[in-house]
Amino acid sequence: MIHRSWMRNQGYGDEVFDGRPVIGIATTWSQLAPCNAHLDEVAEAVKRGVWQAGGFPLEFPVLSTGETIIRPTAMLFRNLMAMDAEELIRNNPLDGVVLLSGCDKTTPGLLMGAASVDLPTIMVTGGPMLNGKFRGQDVGSGTHVWKFEAEMAAGRMSECEARAAEGCMARSKGHCMTMGTASTMACMVEALGMQLPGGGAYPAVDARRMELAQESGRRIVDLVDKDIRPSDILTREAFENAIRTNAAIGGSTNAFVHLMALAGRLEGVELDLDLFDALGRDVPTLVNLMPSGKYLMEDFCYAGGLPVVLRRLVEAGVMHADSLTVTGRSIGENVAGAECFDDDVIRTWAAPYQPAGSGTAVLRGNLCPDGAVLKQSAASPELLVHEGRARVFDSPEAYHAVSDDPDLDITADDIIVVRGAGPKGYPGMPEVANVALPTKLLKQGVSDMVRISDGRMSGTGYGTVVLHVSPEAAVGGPLALVRDGDRIRLDVPARELSLLVDDAELERRRARTDAGPVPAAAQSPGGYAWLYRQHVQQAHLGADFDFLTGTRGHAVPRDSH
Image 1 (tube, one colour):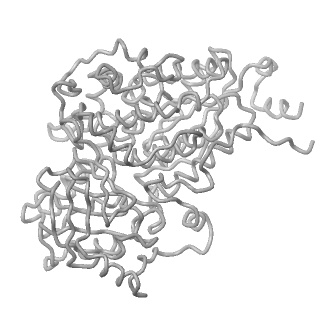
Image 2 (cartoon, one colour; image 1 turned 30 degrees about the horizontal axis):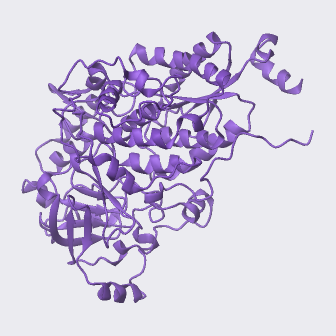
Image 3 (cartoon, helix red, strand yellow; image 1 turned 90 degrees about the horizontal axis):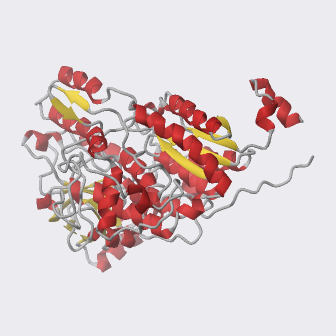
C-alpha cells in the first residue's frame, strides 16, 4: 500500500497496478550534454509504445556525460555512469528497461550497467545531427573542427569565418554526424543486436527516429514477456559481429575500449586486442564517411544505413547470422531485405572504399607490450612505415605550451610523444592524442605527423596517431622511459611499434629514481577521482573498474520490513 500510494501522487490510478510489467526508461537527457538534449522527446515516444503494449513506463535520470563540454573528459565518468545505471535498475521494482543515450560515453556506460543487472533491455540511441553545411560544402562536426583550427593556425582562415562555421557544423539536434565515437557506438549497439534495425543512423530530427523509439517501447514489453535478457543477446558471437562491423564502417578506435569494457561485464565473453586485429584484417572498409571518407551520417541513412552493411557482411560469410537480437529474430533475418540506394556511400564487398586490412590495427612492441591501436583509414599511407626522432612531452599541456613557438626544435619527420594521458595519469584517458601539429610546420604546409600517446583520440579525429599505448606511462609503462632524441620505429603492416633503445639502457633508465612513472597531474586527496585512480584498469582491458567486472544479477536483498 505504501508504495502504491506514493506512486499515485503522480496521478496514476488503480489500473496501472494490475500486474502489468513496469518498464524503466533510463534517460541521459541533459542540457549540459548537447548531444542528448532532445532525449526527453524520445522518452515520450518510448512511453507511447510501452502503454500500447500494456506496460507501465516510468522515466528516470542517470548521470549524463557530454564529451563536448565536461572536463577533464567524459571518459572519467563513464564508469560512474555505469554504476549509477546498474544500481538504479537493480534496486527499483522494474521488469525491463529502455536505455536512452546519445553522446559517446553514454551509450557504453548505460549498456555496461544494464549488462551487469541482466534484466530485459533495449537501447534507443538519439541519432546524429543533420549534415553540416558551410559555404556550399558538407562539413562534419568534430572532423572539421580540427581542420578549421589548423587552417586558422596556418593563417588561411579568419576568426570571423571560423565563428560562422561553428553554427553551420551543429545545425540540428543530435550527436556528431561523422563516423565518430557516438555514431560508431550507435552502430555497435545495432550490430550487437541491442537496438532495432536502422537505429544507428536515423537523424535525431527524422520522424522515423520517433517511430523507432515507439516501437522500442512495444518491443521491451515483449522482451519481458519472453524473458529475453542481455545475456541471451550479448554473446561472444555478437561481439565478433560488432568487431567486424566496426572494421567495415571505419569506426572509432574508442569502440575497442568500450567493447572490451562491456564484454568484461558478461560471463563467458572474453575478448583481447589481438582478436580485434585478427577479425578486422579480412574485412574491407565499406562505408565512405568522414573522418576516413567523404560523406556524413545523414547520407549513410539515406543510402540504407547499417542494415545494408550487415547484409553485405552476412553475404560475405563473415558474420554469425543466427545471433539473436531484440527483435526476437536473428540478425541475418533482420537485414535480409536491406537495400542500398547509394553504392558510393556504402560500397560493395567487391569494390570497397578501402581494402581488407585497412581498419584499426593493433600494434605490439617494446613500447606497448600490452598493445596500442592506430586507425589506418584515417592515417596518411606514407607514414604507416616510419622511423623518426622522438619529441617527448609529459602532458598534453606541456605540448600545447610550446606548440606555437616558431623556434621549437621539431621537423615533419619527428615523432611527437604525448604521455601522462592514460586512464590513471590524467586521469580518465582524454581525447588529446591527436594534438594539432606545431604552428611552424602548419605554416610550411605539413598536414600530418606520427603522434604517439597513452591517451585517446576523438572518433571524429584523423591523422597518423598511435593511441591507447598500454601500459600507460603513469604506471611505469615503457612510454615513461622515452627521452628526447630517441629513435622510434612504426611499422603498421608488421603491427610493430618499437623504441630503438637497447634493453640494458632501458633497465638503467628504469632503475634511476628520476626515471619512473610520469607523475599523475593534480593528485586528488579523495572523491571520485581518487576512487577512479585506485581501481581503473588499463586501456587494453577496457578501462573499467576492477570491482565492476562480471554480472551481479537483478536480485534485490530483502529489506527489514
